[in-house]
Image 1 (tube, rainbow, N blue to C red):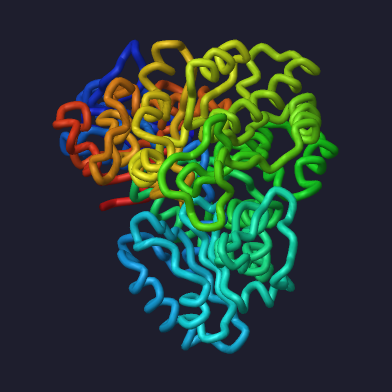
Image 2: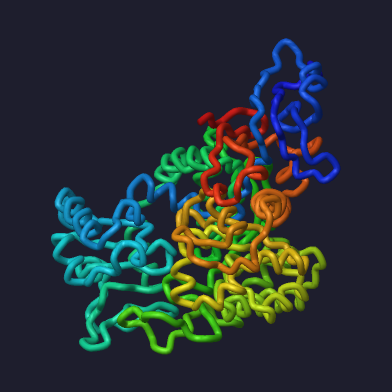
Amino acid sequence: MPLHPEVILLNGRIVTNDPTLPLVEALAVKAGRVVARGATGEIRALAGPDTVIEDLEGATAIPGIVDSHAHPDTYAIRLARWRLLEPAVVPTRAALLDIVARDCAALPPGQWFAGFRFNENKSGGYPTLAELDSASGGRPLFILRTDGHLGLANTAAFAACGIDADAADPPFGRFDRHPDTGRFTGLVRETAAHIFLNAVHRQDTEADIARGMKAVHAECLRHGITSVYNSLTPAKAIRAYQTMKAEGRLAVRTGIIVSGREEGLVEAFIAAGIRSGFGDDDLRVIGVEWCPDCSTSGRTAAYWEPYVGNPVPGEPVPNTGMLLYEAGDLAARATAAHRAGLLVMIEGVGDRGIDFALDAIEAALKAHPVVDHRMRVEHCCYVTPAVRKRIKRLGVVDSSATGFMWELGDAYIANRGQAAMRHMWPHRTLIDEGIPAPGHSDFAVCSMNPWTAIHAMVNRETDTGGDLCRDEAVTVAEALAAYTTLGAWSGREEASKGALTIGRLADVAVLDRDPFAIDPAGLKDVRTRATFVGGERRFTA
């Protein structure tokens, strides 16, 4: 077997995330891993006759991005079969209704219209039920709000799901009703939204997921993302991923976070003795997840103090949000998974929601103490001093939804007030207090672009310039660590990912500018020139 490297990357400014050798010009790669680092001349000398030489032409390169909480499986389906309704597509309510009318006119009677990433704050507000009924022409319609926790249904959709006008709210959900008339407004929350989601997704197949994943992976690679952890992965997607791996179609390394939302799935993993870490570098079980907390931008996340700003007609007043599990039930589920060797992740957004997640984690640790447990609170947005103190005492990971800051930050300011931004995603304080806080996009809730999130972390501003409290600003290096070293560490993959050291995977993103040298106001504009996975070039701009 020849000893020469298979690939050499040279003439670059390669950021290694290794404090002992933070910057090198070149890397040598064999069997997908870094085998040598150094100056261009010395690494070029290692080349054999079959070595592929990749000239970075002086560009800055970083370790591949690890997006430690996202939803590629549902994004794959929605890219393939749903209508994208983000603000760039529907800047006004009239534009939304026009798209609905045109699309529904082309649908056969009875076929669903499904849309996603609708943001009423930037698209003219929620349409009325009457407006949706008129535009949809009798076809059932469901539009998922960008947060994935609320949606809009029309009268035909209520009928298709067997929900009549006097139907009771489902447990942990709500059919909003107009306070004056008592009639449905069309807005449905949490488990009420799941009724319509399940109806739309009922026809999804493993082949649909695998087919749509090609576009998702292409988008990931375009943003320098080489690893992504699939939050709340259902059985159907787990099977699809295994098929893709077997057929050589898994272009991005994938971590499975098993869905606690699919009844019996976590229990099946426990019964089979599958632990976190099962798998390989391409496809690995990371842990299990439950989602008891909700959405701040949609005014459902659980806080100790009520929401401020303009209430949506039909929401409870005063409104402190909602939780989606009974405390004892969630604690029992978390304890069983933790005892079985599965990394437990529980969503908590508001401070009351985070406390609820920590209650379950604390119960699991009391039943089965583990020092380096790395249990995570997902999203973990409103981290007050009291919450921080508890997170640190329990040794919990603040799995921070930094992707929300840029696109949803304005809604956070409107719904919680400017003063609350001091404790919203408080990364400066988290770092100073030694609390590990990897960042993630939660795509397709928000864009997967890591550089808009990094921009928001460094500049503490939203996409409109909204103030997220400059006191919590971090450096570019600290923000990048949240998407590389800490991302990998949060999934117990730090031995192979997150840094470019000897023996680690040669996952590399080559950038079009040096993020450490530019004006921080331009971080949002950083783009990827090339992406390498295991030394193999998988994207070229």
